[in-house]
Length: 212
Length: 282
Image 1 (cartoon, rainbow over the protein chains, first blue to last red):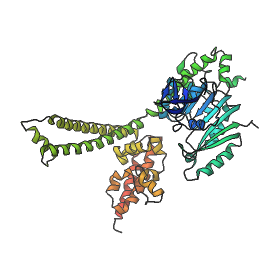
Image 2 (cartoon, rainbow over the protein chains, first blue to last red; image 1 turned 90 degrees about the vertical axis):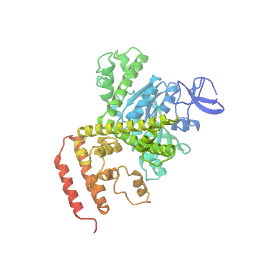
Image 3 (cartoon, each protein chain N blue to C red; image 1 turned 135 degrees about the vertical axis):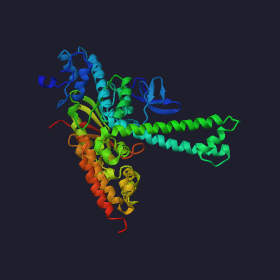
Image 4 (cartoon, chains in turn brown, red; image 1 turned 180 degrees about the horizontal axis):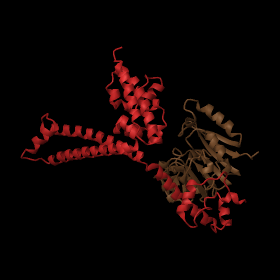
C-alpha cells in the first residue's frame, strides 16, 4: 500500500475500503481526503476489488458511456486526467452536473451512446480507456461503434447487462453471443460474472484489434 | 490534418470566447470520426495551452448539458404529470388525515358523530382542554389540503385542452393527464400500442399474468372512464379495447398535429353504442 497510488486500500473505521482521493459526493466514508469506493454501488469498483486490471491509472483519458448519476464517474475522475461522461437521460444528468461542479476534469455530455457521430466533434481521439455501462439493447454494437475513440493501446471496460438485452433469454446465452460479436474487433483479456452485488451482469476487459 | 475535419470541431464555427455559441455547437454539431481536438485547437490558435482548452471545453459542455437537460424536462406534459401526481398525493394524505381526525374526535368526545358535528360539540364546550387547539389545527390543515387539490384539478382541466385536445375530449382532463403521467410523456404515450395503453396502471396484474399466475387484465386506469365503469362487466373487455384504440389514435393526433379532430370522438361514440346495444346477458 503506497501513499501515492492512484487508488489503494485503506482502513476507515475498522473496515477496509477501496479509496480514491477527491471531494466527497454521495455521503461515502472518508479519511484524510480519501473516499471509499463502494463495490456494491459501482460495477467498476466491484471489479477492481476483485484484483482485475481495467486500465484505470493516473493521467489516463477516459470516455465513459452511461455515466448515470456520476457515482462511479466521480471515482474515475479522481484518478484520470479527463473523463468524457456521456449520459442519455436528463434526470440523472442533473446529479452528474452536480458531481462535475466539484471536478473540472469531467466533461458532461447529454448524448446518445448509440450515435457516436453526435459527440465525435467534442470527444478527442486516442483515448486510453473506454468504460461502458449502458442499460439498453445492442450493448456490443455500442462498444464496436465507440471503438473509434480508443487509441490502439487503449482498453475497453464493458459491462453487459443481460436483462437490458433480452429479459427472457438466459443470461449465459446472451453473454456467449456478446463475447462472440465483440471478438470481431476486440481482443478479450478477461471476463468476470458479477454475482454478489450486480446480478446478471458480465464485466469484460478487452483491447481493440487493429482495423483491417 | 485536413481542413474538412477541423471545420466540424466544436470550437471552430463559434464566436471567439463565447460560451453560449460554443455550447450550442456542442449540442447540435456532429462529426464522423474523432480527432486529436486539443492539439488541433492549439494549432489553429483557438487556445494556447491544453489546460486552457480543457477549461473552455468544461465550461461550454457544462452549459450545453444543463440546457439540453432542462429543455427535455421543462415541457408542459411533464409539468402536468407532476400536477396530477401531486393531486393524487393530496387525496391520499387527505384520506389518511381524515381517518386520524375522526378517530381522535371519537376518543375525545366519547360520541360517535361525524366530523362536523363532533367539532361543533367540542367548540361549544366552555372548558377547552390542551388537546383542543391541536384537533382544530388538524381540521384546518385538512381543509386547506382539499382546497389545494381542487385548485390543482382546475389547473389540470384548463391546461389539458391545450396539451392534448383530442385525448382530453375523449378521456376527460384528469384521466388524460393520468395516462400521460404513467406513460412518462405525451410522446411516449403516442408511441405505445393501444394494447399497452389499455392496461396502463394495471402493471401488477399484467406481470402476474405474464408469469402465468393470473388472467390478463382487461383495463388499467381507463377503468375510471364511464364507457367502461358503466358498461356491463361482461362487455368491459370489449369496451376497453375499443376505448384504448381510439385513445391511442387521439394521443398520436395530439402529439404529431395538436389540433382537435371532432370526428375521432364521434367514431368512438358510435362504436360504444354498438357494444352496449349487445347487452350483457348473452
